[in-house]
Image 1 (cartoon, rainbow, N blue to C red):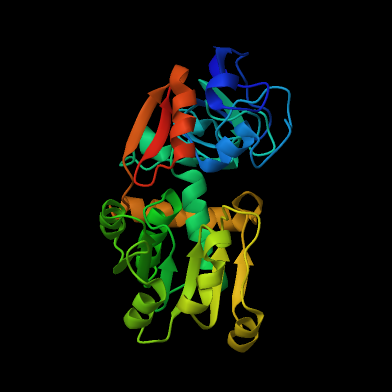
Image 2 (cartoon, rainbow, N blue to C red):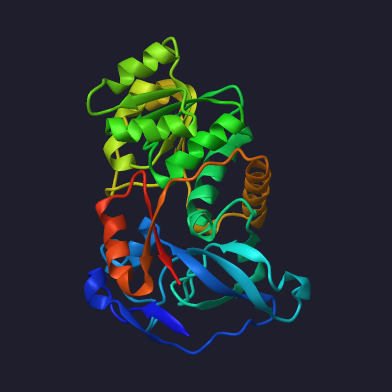
Length: 326
């Protein structure tokens, strides 16, 4: 099969190779997927570049956790009726050397999820990591129905779905962005209020929107940069769910913390209980079937341009997803 792979960490255009690898076949409990589209998340670039994750866990790595395609073979213990099923796949390369940047992929059957007919392969390749992260961050501690929620980075992949999911769950959503273009993206997802943090005072705007009470939940993509602002936006006994940090540490004022009793929860999407994933898949299927779900536009790259696709993600793609087609 044709695949993209690397044997050392470094810049995308320097380490990626395109070539032939042996066709995989599913083991017990696995399916094989003919991949049509391979989505790229920031975590895929971290593993490849070594900037945040040093060391090669395997001699050769086929990158990318998320993708979409059609099941063409099943292993023992998997219903043969799944052959021909359109699916999106996620966590393909988690603790494994084989990701979705290849024509064929064998992986555990529960990581290949039925893809609703109204979602294309290119859109499906962008679902896994973002929807699981957004769903879990909102479903924690009983959900967000009736609450005011602040989604940091509302034009990003996770933020865009988080806005939608929070609205479906009955929350009032405030989203932060860094430009007018990104503000339009957040509004298109359904945000009730959008704050450009480069031109507006975040705390003052949140206070005005919430009548001084602050939000009940913050979804945080950059804890290192934004931790010091939590006391400006979070209400008493509120919750912060941290799924990303673009620096090694963040700081909060201890006195404020003691007086306001926040819950700060760090989550790692790759190591959650199985029932959490199933709940997210079920909700996504229901929302998609009802025609509610929106997706960010996709920029596609052929397999031999995977280096450019990874560079696009590294440079920042709010409002646009990078996908390799096969």
